[in-house]
Image (cartoon, rainbow, N blue to C red):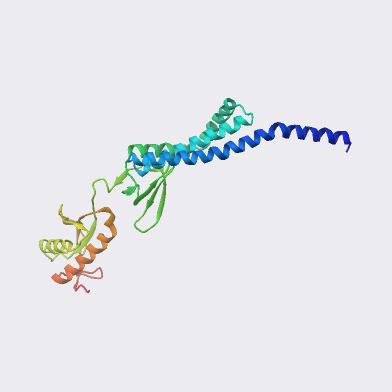
Amino acid sequence: MDTAVIEKYSTMAIDWAMTFAPKILLAVVIMVIGLWLVKKITGVFEKVLERSNLGPELLGFFMSMASLALKFIVILIAAGTLGFQVSALMGVLAGVVFAVGLALQGFLGNFASGITIVFFKPYKVGDWVQISDMFGKVESIQIFNTILATPGNKTLIIPNGQVTDNIITNFSTKGEMRLELNVTMPYAESFPRVKEVIQKALNEVKTIKLDPAPLIGIETFDSHNLVLSVRPYIHPDDYWDATFESLAAIKKGFKDAGIEVAYSEGIELGKIGE
């Protein structure tokens, strides 16, 4: 290659470096210092919000939005230092956001639903809820999703758009909920007697609320049995403990009272074991 050409490109490279290297270095410094300041500012902002007694849902939402906005400002300042026209950059960004928004309407719908949930609070972190056919305890409310922990220790990640499009049953709003248990009894047995046995059994279960009193009634007539509905009140956090303890207590009560049951193999009555 001609020496003159090499010198020409070398000179251009040096001139470019002399012109842009300080700007690049300054932009890097702005980014480093700016992100450090964002971390400090959001930390102070978080402490201020915590003193205002905001719930964890609003606290997390505001912190996410504040951090995102401040980081965007730092990026714009750094871009301006490099010589980009901020106004033109904003126009391009608006166009990109619009195009991405059309492609990601579902995500935007989940985002809008997340804002609705945070501000209107149909439930909060710690509540037991049923959304459609999904039941669990609310672990967190994020911008796009709601996280539930099921009684079986599974994690459900539900898009917020599906939450607002479905019926939400909040079991924690009233501080208590009814268990929906079913027990069978033979036709020949006295219902008032069986009801009394069940009531006494429930009185022994510590997780059952006795005020208001449990509802015990005949739900339907089966081929071999009467199907009874047993509806005691419990705290939502005691759902599974109360379910298992109640059924065990009723079974023991039936055994102690000598109440027989009909087996599906026939209509003969049999004893209840331990």
